[in-house]
Structure formats: C-alpha cells, structure tokens
Length: 177
Image 1 (cartoon, rainbow, N blue to C red):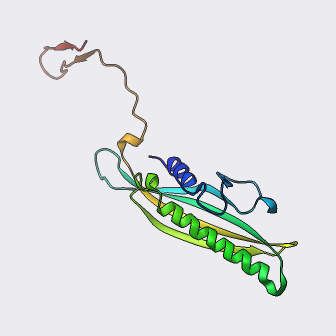
Image 2 (cartoon, one colour):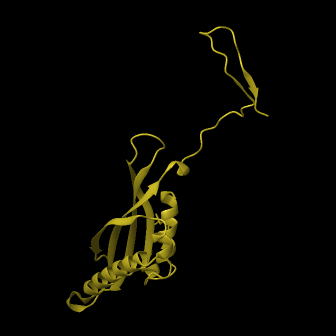
C-alpha cells in the first residue's frame, strides 16, 4: 500500500455517493464552471513517515493527507437566501464525503485509522450566484514495511570463496549451481 493507492480508494469511495455524482476529479486542478457544480477535487497533499523499528528492516507508520475540495453554487435571492443555500449545500457535501469515506470497506481494509479530519469553508458572491467551497483534509494512517520498498539489486551468486587471508593458506570454494 502506498499513498497514491489510498488516493484511488478515496476517489472510488466518494465516486457516486455525494451530490457531486460522477463529477469527482483527481487531481482536479482546473477552475470549475458554475454549470458543472457541485463537484469534488481530490488530491494527495502530503505524506509523512514515522519509524517504528530502531533496527532491522524499515517499518513506518505513514500518514497521508488527502485533500478533498467541494464546490457548490446557488443563485442569489432576497435576504441573502442564496448564500444560505450555498452554505448549507457545502456542509451537506462535506457530510456526504465523510460518510462515504468512513463507510468504505475497501479503504478501511488497507489502513490503520483516519487519524484526523479537518474542514474549512469559503464563500464568494461574485455575479448572479453564490459559490461555496468546502475543503476537507483527511489524515490517513497506514503501515509500510520492507515489502513496500524496492528490493536492493544484487548479483547472482555462483560461488562462495571462504579463503582467509590472515590464516594459513587453506581455501574452500563451494559451487552453488
């Protein structure tokens, strides 16, 4: 398991489980047009490794931070009702993402835990629509052991020479083929 595998599992988990429907993009770096909202953009933001083995093979508790950005829109209305609709839709989208991720069996089969979830909201009232955005950061912990890292290249061994240079001249050569 590596962090990009987790990213794929999160994208799959929220794929059609939210108001965004199939509009889930990874990494989703393009600005969105109002008519395409609501949508979700998912990206791997960072990862950190904490060693859990002082000696021997490398073993880590790795924490991957996956950022999910949700965007929604609502038409302007009297008494700031459009802003309220956009705000409610953003927080509803956030809740749908959380439920989809937490209920993802394929994801939880691969991880130790979701160590933290953070959410921030932002709003804009430019033009005839209110745009609301929600940013969700998931800190997902998982184990990485020696099997996760590339094996060290070695030469094929065809014989072993056990001659000792600091003893009397006796040598043992063992063919390994």
